Image (cartoon, rainbow, N blue to C red; front, side, top):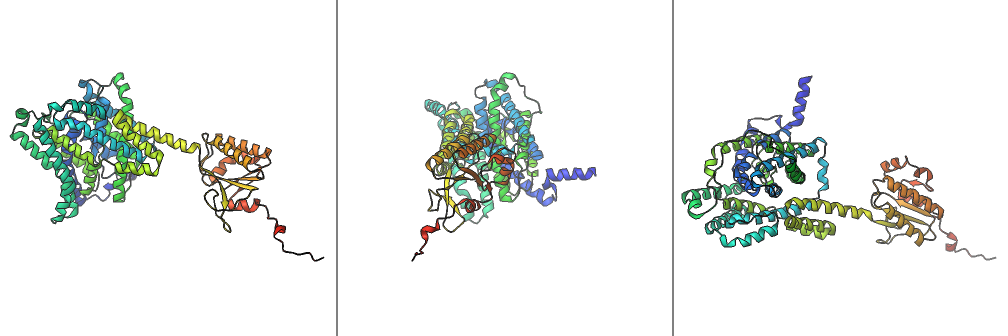
Length: 584
């Protein structure tokens, strides 16, 4: 019995283990090798972006993969350093003393991981619903532009620090006189190669006869050619010593022991808010990737398990001297396209990254920083989505303003505040829209049982029986607006004897709205008007049944609007249509 329960638990936690065979293993291995080729330069580049030594990127690319495989739900997710999270890390630790930044980055990972774990244990996967797609798109677009600006100092070989776009641009302009020509040439050539291979290589390979899938994979892995060429040129011509080209430098080989970073109260006070924002962004970004790949593979991801997987990955990243991580869209797509079948590919990737940390570091020390900066800049091209900003603004003014404000908040205030501005504005506009919900007088299409807005359609209305359709749930913020709307309707309809509240769109009535309805019922009664309801949802009607309103209601609750009108609409005065002639 115990063995059966254990087997059932394993099946629920890792369903992909069922039927795992040699063929699946070979698919996972090939995918892991391909993603490793992509991850090695990326982890160095993103550590550079985070303002940390390159080996920290390697540390953040091993143990988090193991933790996510144990707790995450996506079969294809590749967890590790990413551009947006790296920039957020840089912004969070920028104000701290330089000698404490490595430890602070590890603390940031642990804090954000603990927050994600707590949210996962509390089944808080629904929190993703509070961050709109337009905010995420605008945030990532702004962050991508900020990332590109922050990397231009490495392209020019100058110093230009800062956490906002304007600070970075000002410092970059001031340092242009110190541009290193050789560094600029290496950076520009790298950007051109990365961009051309990304845009045209797959199509070119396909045209010469390579299969589409292999052509796309080859194009994604082409940057390794530029990495190898720049390392070879740097070593052969001694670019660092002869021409002053900044290179990665010495990278300690091996991996650190798992240890808890030293935390003090002052650092915790400075980092808890950035850690919370970072945790939210990491979850939303990772879930978007996981859901996209799940849709393509017709599989399923569990938001609560994703919280646990990301939380465990971040905690272990902090314990292994790394920094915050999340799911990488680019590497996850490559993992999926390369044929990965299960999370075993993540375990193999961790093993290959360990071998890289042990044996590749002597070669990577000659890699120019301008080449890594070029890799980051070209990677940011795919993050731009200005078209979505324009489409959002055309469709919804409130959502468009929120998206544009989020974009500029990232550039003006820094990446850590952009998402907060977006979430606050999105919630503000949502609440504002529910403060004054649409409420329409409705009438009937002649000869039918269909009722529509009388201001928009040519429908029949009745001066004795009025119907007010409420197109929003009723709660404390809009309850008094309903009172005012009905008050004006009574004033404008002196012959009205019955008022029907058509509630097909009302999914909730809270205590404040209930009190307003009781007040409305009382006021209408004193004015000689009977109050009725139609098309109430069952759960709303059941809740109202526990209140005094149902017992005090002057009218009835009708199942449909047509039933209400059939019962309440007065018979027409047929005498005015009589053609009888009295001959006496």
